[in-house]
Length: 73
Image 1 (cartoon, rainbow, N blue to C red):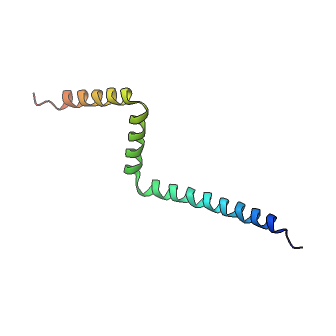
Image 2 (cartoon, rainbow, N blue to C red; image 1 turned 90 degrees about the horizontal axis):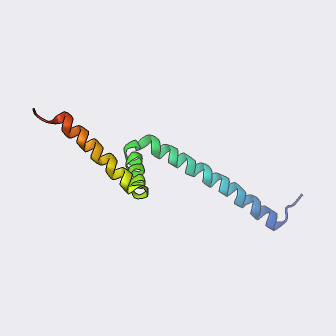
Image 3 (cartoon, rainbow, N blue to C red; image 1 turned 90 degrees about the vertical axis):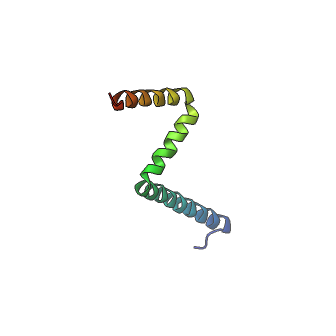
């Protein structure tokens, strides 16, 4: 039975949306498996933009601990 042209178009749109979302998911998965350092860096940048005070305090704390543990005497 022939489909109405608008129904065929909607069916194509749905299938292309599903394919697009699946390929986007695969791209994100592939990228996260191949570039974990870049993903971590992106997350840190985003966190620093959203919560600059917390990020600055965490950096200060890490620097303090490293300076204390690595001092030469």
